[in-house]
Length: 288
Image 1 (cartoon, rainbow, N blue to C red):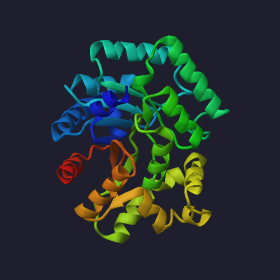
Image 2: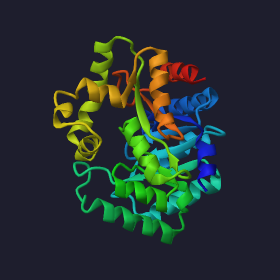
Image 3: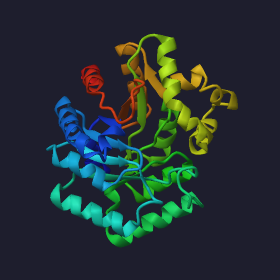
């Protein structure tokens, strides 16, 4: 099952919120950018934020090969039957091009946030009943129970804001077959002070979310690492920055820890609805 998933997404993809723009004036440029990512050799586009099949459809229609996945669709905002119907429509039009990435989001983002693990299990039950196949869905899994769920009831895991150590931990739980595709933020900057400043700007919103901070604490960081925008140790663990060899080495560390695919998110200080096409091209050259 998962070998087909791994073949579909390839080794590297781009994670970006701006590619899901709902502004009609920007959708054409987003589709152009998606086609460019395909030409650059990326295997997948991961739509950042709470996204759905409707956000993926224009990008899939404007390309011929690249896979598009949600990263993530919140279980609190879409009913399983509606999700399955949207998946079926997109699958009929473009077979094999869309993967549903699911997650429980955060208490600050969903008023109905209660018993998230149980809610996720119930949601997967609903998808099963509605006929959405397990081998086309992925879970944004951080803790051990959710990683087990990604192993047993999905095609794998797409964790966000993690380290190579978390990747190795996830691989041990998942076993060999399921897809493991962590996201990694990349700062194309060699000056340490500026690189870490850009990283802290991107990290700030996540340090207010317990799902992420608790995961850091589970994997060897301390409360001190989570203060003042994040310690250098934390920044250097969850971001790739520096010259091309340093960035490539950091990406390779995730692969060596067990990642099948790495979803790269450029951090440049620009708004998240921008399209950093020059940076994506630089990354493609670095990965070649």
